[in-house]
Length: 267
Image (cartoon, rainbow, N blue to C red; front, side, top):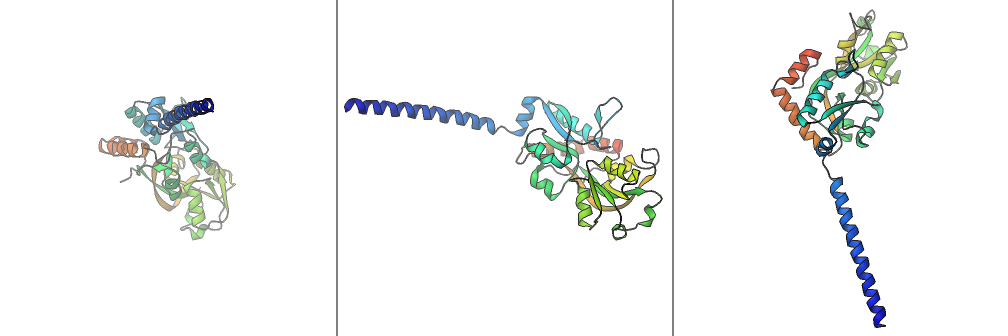
């Protein structure tokens, strides 16, 4: 009986030691799990920026290099952090999933700050101003002076965008959602839609004389908005980015980009 008790005690001691060792390993994993976003980005040496092709914010030059207001701003921030900026084209409808899955580190593509964005990301302070505007054929634009006069039109909007929300809020019933703002312009150009709703930044740079959409022009403004940069929920990069926004406002970098690309800097 004594021998059995000794064996039982020894067995319990071994199991306890094994359990404690396991506890130690779990804590180590826990420590790794709480690594901050900024540390994670610096450790891998790159800031992965989720974008869509959207002139003048993010677009490719003749050599295939990403450029634009947001692209240059992102590269400047990455340089300050001591990492490289890498641009990845994403499906705008799945932007929050791609962010949380760590396929990208941020959504930085002329993203309007909305309640949905604030719910699903750690969103930065505003860095640029925007409006949702109606674009249509220049021969028809003067026939429509307000939103009510447009309710019978067929619209094209980017899926999951502020434009889609604006169309819904204004009661536009005939709306086709497309993959990108550039596709919305193509819908109007081809005659598949009477008008589209896009960001004023894109309307200014991609429609009118000297552009690929010379017959299209900007109509009325529907909403006034601001752009922000979305990071993972609870990410320390939100505060880090707010510091860079303040820094680049004060040192004139954002003013320089504003003049170069025709984008209004937020107050």
